[in-house]
Amino acid sequence: MIPEQLRGDFELRWNRLQAALRENDMDACLLTDSVNIYYTTGKVYNGYFYLPAEGEPCFFVKRPTGYEGERVRYIRKPEEMADQLLAMGYAKPGRLMLEADELSYNDYLRLRAVFDPVAEGNASRMLRWARREKTPLEIELFRRSAKIHAEVYKEVPACFRKGMTDVEFQAEIELRMRRHGSIGLFRAYGSNMDIFMGSVLAGENAEAPSPFDFALGGAGVDASCPIGANGTVLRDGMAILVDMAGNYTPYITDMSRVFAVGKLPDEAYRAHEVALRVQEAVVAMARPGAACADLYAEALRVVNEAGLGTNFMGTKWQAKFVGHGIGLQINELPVLTPRSKETLLPNMVFALEPKFVLPGVGAVGVENSFLVTSDGVEKLTVFPEEIIQLK
Image 1 (cartoon, rainbow, N blue to C red):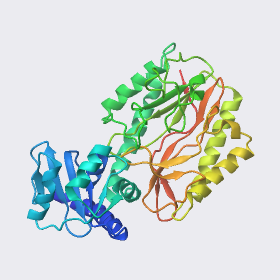
Image 2: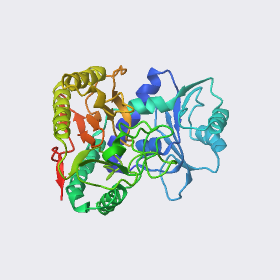
Image 3: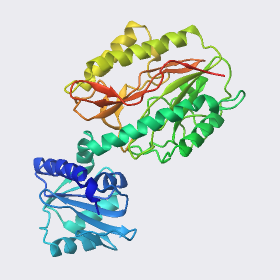
Image 4: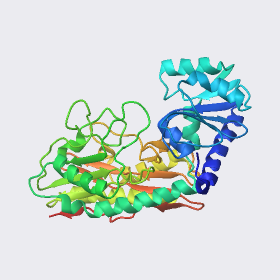
């Protein structure tokens, strides 16, 4: 199932999960969510990944056909797994972790009935914690995404023409993204987190709050998906925040840049400079052991000293975070928020996004993806950070 050249990286992931299973006094976990299947196998298939606290994993596949391996078993329904495990010499798991946050209630009950464990745990939470620290292969894929992400942003000015709408502008960017190999799918953790390939916020639309848990909102083109571009005509004096996905590998880089139609008011350039100062201050503190709550507090200190607290991370609704983990999903751990109890760990990758919304002008600020190293952080998304003039 796992190519030999990648086996070492996946064994590292399995070992992390097995250590977490033992720490939680669990015998095994059973995964079926596509993100978790990909994380543990490098593929997306319809079926299950079974990992005991000790020993080798098993791969139960419904479809597609064509997978081979010593512990690959094809099944039609989950009830077949218990007997298959016994036939392969595995003990019945008395304490089992299931994806309580992703499974439907009926699926959860069905899987529980298959194994009839004496105790259960939440594998969803365990996977999110395990995925915080990236493996060497994951970091390599982040670097690839970041490089292509920057190449696409170089083409953004060529997407602009006078009189177009923000939706037309975004569609031109999306075309270039696809030409550069964008996977297209924008994965997010949790329910009610819909978005399409990223967000372009122009002018007053940047103030529109969204029900989704993203830093900024936007009204969207329809009430069924109230996020992002809404058909605003791009005009002079308007700031455009481009926050399109870096999904050129399965690992998503996050990067925002501001583009200007004509000259913006002086307050926009000042607020943008403050955002860059916030980034500088947080980066100076960020290293293994740094508390995420302290990083947020440092960002807020710079913002309040500049007198821009009422514009920070929104106006009508203000996001209470300034950064978030990224990976296979756009909203992984850690989260840079005052409520966080987490600290940075080596090989975490997070997006830092200090942004300001100015009524009548739009959003300014910056967002970059950072890798936590042994003594600080490394910026992965390298691209000019000043406000870029559109012609």
